[in-house]
Length: 72
Image (cartoon, rainbow, N blue to C red; front, side, top):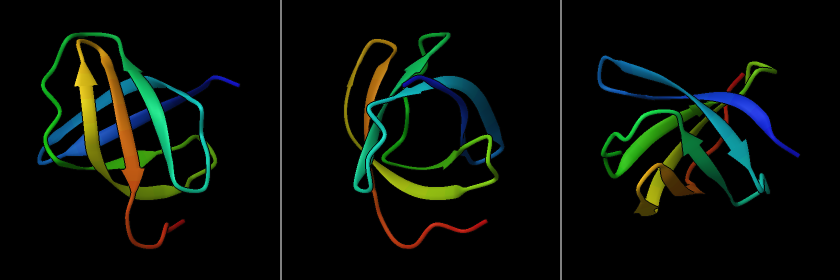
């Protein structure tokens, strides 16, 4: 299932598509090539805010590992 989501880091908020969501992480696809920092916050449409660590990035594809508890 694909969900529209956003990732936030610093003052940056980017819209992305979230794939392969699980309890431990997600794969996202950015709409523009941007280097994602190590720590971000994934914001899902249901209001969930999930801190995450970038595990890998290949172009616009990014693998995130969830860290800490989600809020929202």
